[in-house]
Image 1 (cartoon, rainbow, N blue to C red):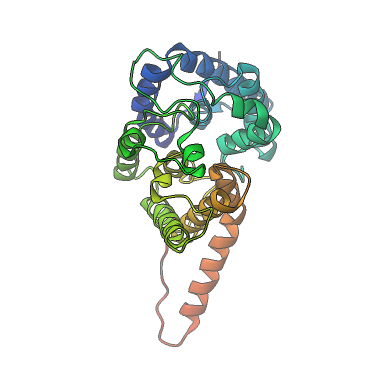
Image 2 (cartoon, rainbow, N blue to C red):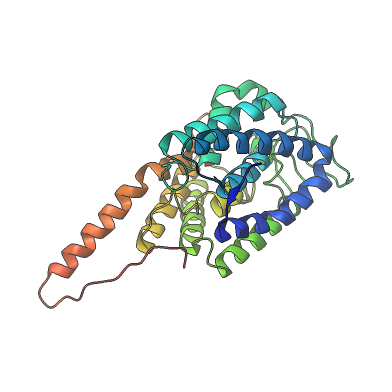
Length: 315
């Protein structure tokens, strides 16, 4: 029997995901349950293989990784692709680094990026039909994702974006639920509001500058409500392991992710870009902390200057 390492912070993330899963079940029905079953079984099993060699328990962070990963794909994603991705996430994104607390990259994002790069054609096809798996009868934006429609110059209903009546990944739908989850995570000091706020503000500032500056490929401002930007920012950018540890660093880190998302969406061949932005931010997390520490050390070295404390954490 698999034994889990108790991690209250990770449990709070799972609690925040419950309403999103409930909504996903209403929209996608048994397909979400089937996807989650495959992901949780293979994800937990992969971490167990790594941890049993060290006589350690499976971390509850593994449950968070599986929960986020299962929501990060459209409903028609083949189950074997989901399985390969979560094995890669737990093994190469976490296990090879020594397990929980030692991984450089967010495992769920690493697995998602692996799938999107390796199976791009299959993933694009899985977006083309929507609404066939769900229990609900809500009107949805069919056949193309909102980002795809905006890229082709078509308009998307703001209400559809807020309520999640659109095609896309199973967990990125209802913006209002994601916003409520962010409030809960911030209130319980589980997620850093600095990362979330700086990421959203930086993305909005750059996107507005490009759009109102007349850049041909720039997407309209409502594009920030489409795709997985808010979902990834709330649940993955704030991962305490792969994010910087200093509070001041959180502003820089979040802004870096927000700016990168907009640059990728505007100028690259990838219509989304959020996963790559998180990985890019993860790469510089330690360097950002080192830079902040060095800057504060220089300030403290000045005559009459008082040392400035900068504690880590999500406060």
